[in-house]
Length: 364
Image (cartoon, rainbow, N blue to C red; front, side, top):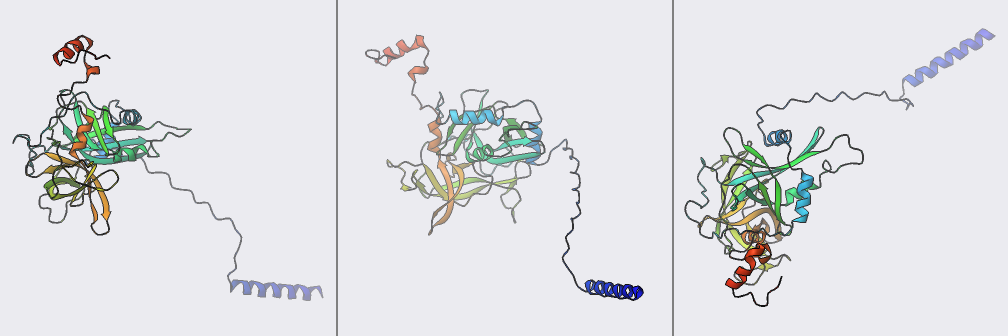
């Protein structure tokens, strides 16, 4: 009897296993833990870097430089600061000062500005264009550029120091100028002034003198023919007029025209009136990396604006080029011929008052 029960039980178990084998059922099981592969070994940086990123990261490993934290403090404290010297008025520069659009063998005065931060194996770089302006101090080079790329690197999570940080970020701002065979990378020593509303930034560096561009204090009339310095990372199809620039990029003085002006409220403004000309509209649309570059009057060869990006003007006109008039640049400099009494040495103030017939009734 016991043998019959065992036989029946064995037969029933066989049928159950056969039924299970023909159907799929969910099972509770622990998934196998697959370990992540180890990170790849650090690739050694080539002695001769070939890209802009390589050049900037190599510069961070160089001699000590002014960190972005220092530059950020200057950016905030020197907003609206007026320098104690003036920028020359050059609405119609001489032939040797005019911007040359067709020369490819000589520097055209346009530079690249890079803000870089690195922490461990992570880094962030923001790039823009810029150009040098005249400075009475021979050892100091002044570079004008846009401010929004500096704001972008300022908000980077890599730059923000966590509560527990295994390593401190290494950072800096650099001016990259074309060179042969490799571009020249110079660290920025300070921020001399900034106009936040106009999106303009004035940088300072030491080193070899740079070619400076003439700047006009007068707004260009609407429909003025211009040349804008555009930058691309790959040569466009056809490539006519595009020349090699910095770190594998290509540049071209693209033809365009001034479309109009706007005030800080976005309302249409007219040059030659009491309207505040806070921004200008132009065509064609600028490319990435062009912000901070110059807008030049094609006839006079003087800078009449600074490229900032693009903006939707209205539903009819669509997106247009967006820039700052060159007259905004002069807000960071002393007016020509204006002597600020507080900056004169004490021994010369009385003679200055007498010469100007202002001595009586004037007190400090």
